Length: 92
Image (cartoon, rainbow, N blue to C red; front, side, top):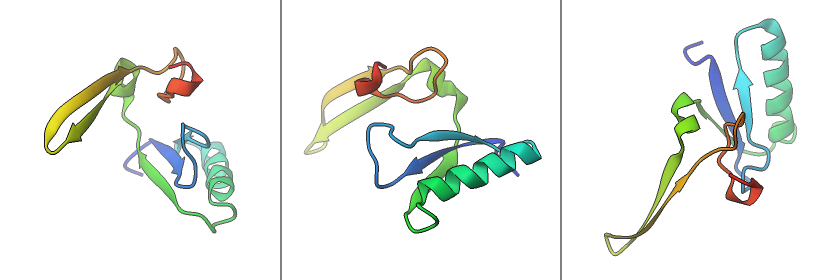
């Protein structure tokens, strides 16, 4: 596998609910990944996103809002220590 860690995101959720870090290194990781994917897809019936994990998230992320091509607002968000998710409602 090219990416040893990925982020699993259910498309039917918001505010980081159901988002998990999925590892692909060991047979135990593969078993856990299969269970996470099966759960997130509700037994392969719901769509999910599986994306490359970016370790730089520990430094935060920027959200930008535009209106008619002009930047109207931005926010710098940081995950809580020891977490990879940036969830404002969860304390990030």
